[in-house]
Length: 214
Image 1 (tube, rainbow, N blue to C red):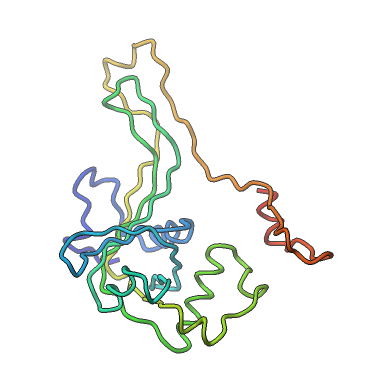
Image 2 (cartoon, rainbow, N blue to C red; image 1 turned 30 degrees about the vertical axis):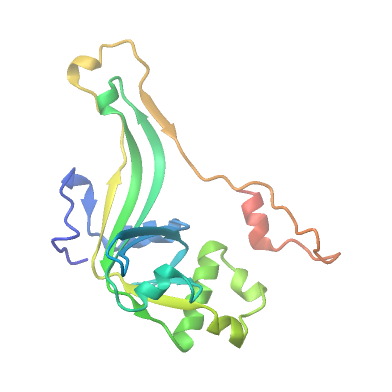
């Protein structure tokens, strides 16, 4: 992606990347993002929300009553972030403790989504959360579509920052008799819990079974 002054990584610059595929992969793996914007009152707000990527576009959705979406629909500038935590990094010194992570920061101006693109965006959000769910569930009614706001943010100004490696200690600390290493971190899906009003004989979908198998 083209670099800008806003996407240039200053702290630990060697961890920064403008690689498009890396940015896409982090966005696609993350289940939610944080959206930062300046409220009409002039104060900063950061809201966690579900997202989905289609091509070079990031979609956000929610109720028309949403404070965030009402502001974004006016074209207010936003900063969107996602972070994936991969490991805790325990060094021999407190100062050198760290984390292995993958993150993306996006700057952009949202636009309101209407028409056929709105349905496409909602499908993307649904399948981003649980792939295959859109085709299996009831489609939105006209009133439900009217009760949903969708905005799109171009991914033209984005960068990634990644730390992925071992402990890095000061040379003199390697001789200390202190345990050091990585504690890997991952998201674990537990046994699916059927709804208590599920019709008898309704089989568990294959995409849910995939979560059961981990």
